Image (cartoon, rainbow, N blue to C red; front, side):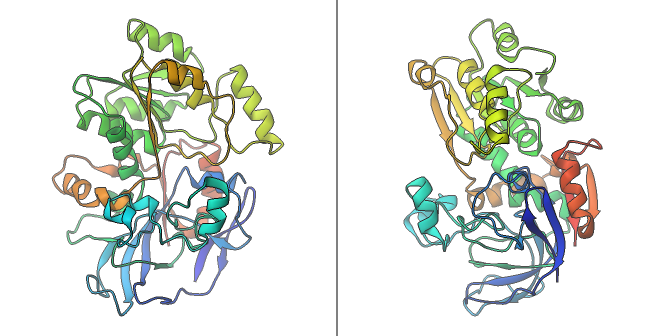
Length: 390
């Protein structure tokens, strides 16, 4: 089959690779009908995620048709249409029973590698390094889905792929970010990053009763999308000082809830700490540029909440922990427990409360995936979200 494979920093290719096979009775195989490039994939593309190997199949936002099921899978059959979550969960361990699916104790088959870096291992992830399981990803014609009896959600309606595809990751991720922000009715919510996750965090903040939502970015088309679809106020950090502007907008108090939807590869318009990060990352002395995290801590109101759906990889430094502690901020983070949110968010889509396809700017065949990575990374051609059709 054809699949997008990682070959090094800035080098992904469409290769011929072996078709996946059932390896465990709980596996399923799907024919991928739609898959997407995620902002997290850029951490692979840019060489910041360790334990990648040449030839690894990448991608973690797939959906498609079931073509084969393992003997232990009784809830799905060939011909079913499913969306596959990016995190793999066994459904049986203590964490899964608490609905903390991205912390599954079982699914990372390379857990010892992760424990060395993190203390304990999170769940295995599709197409996202050998530290997190070494599983083949979903930017391919076919995909083996471990724990296929737990993760995938069946789509029984005739909704097109583009309306349900993002149940695989970015819609639940934005929703969990807003939930973890502990938004109370009338709160002012600031969202750093207007990429796809940021867009869904904005949408979800309104669902939780926000009184104001302020979006922060510098890419005009992303800010325009946040205004048009998110009905929020905007700050262009190339033109405005974020801290000063937020203080002015909130009469000196700061936003009640702050969401960092940027993560490891943040930019800052000439900020000293951002320049420092860029220099260190350019010589691989760090995997994380943490400008947004620092800025959100400084901007958040006293006693407020900081929610971090943006992915961090290693050991970001110069974090203003004194401000974090003395301002009594609550911090909530984590990879998304996708399976926890599947059904309630599908219900919102089916009821017409949201059409997630609004983020899509590029629809391309799988063979054009490598060029799309570069376009997406460089923010060219008004690119916000790429959907690939194998």
